[in-house]
Amino acid sequence: MISMREVMRELESMGTAQNRKIYQRHGAGEVLFGVSFANLKKLKRKVVSAEGKKGVNHELSLALWNTGNADAQTFATLIAEPAKLNVETLESWVEGLRYYLLADLIGDVAAQSPASMQLLKNWTSSKIEFKKRTGYALLNYLAREDMHLADSFFEPYIKVIERELQASDNRAKEGMNNCLIAIGGRSASLKDQVLQAAKSIGVVEIDHGETSCKTFVIEAYVNKIWDRKKLRSK
Image (cartoon, rainbow, N blue to C red):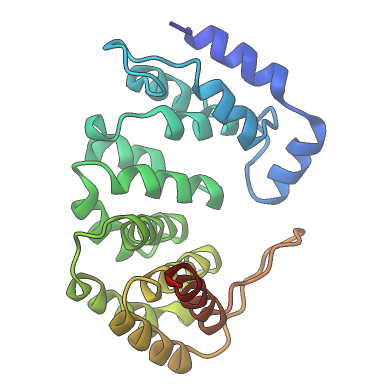
């Protein structure tokens, strides 16, 4: 079983100066090695839980998070066991968060945890930029991955996003924009509601800083999702 020390040593060896610069422009902060996501996925294959399950190790994920290193924290979200994540741990992970890519990863793993519905309510209603971003990343995951949820679960959130998006802080606004696109891809009924909301919202402008990232246009991306669905159904 790979140890905490071995993981940190491998992360450091895989980091590059170029990646550090890129990630810092995206908000990762100063404490990081600059490890590519591809290498994190390779390293994940070396991780095993105490029960012998491959690709997860909850205790290791908690220890990695506590290092404060952005690469270690990113890796922590990849090897955490969602079933063992509770409200207290996940709330501590979003406390003081300033890295939107990490917010999205926390949202993904939180969506698979027993605390998902409680956190969804708390985070999406938050006034704190990155906590709200994480809440909408959680909802985004549910929209894409949980086909058991009825349209009625998402409909109130369409109204909330329509009402709050433009007045929200930059990275929360981006998370809401991306989430609305995911909701629009679930069903024909939700697609119509999302496209109607997009008309009301208008042009969404996101400050991406010193990066080449572009803002996803809601109407265009929702229609692209449905065009792909049509092609797959032929």
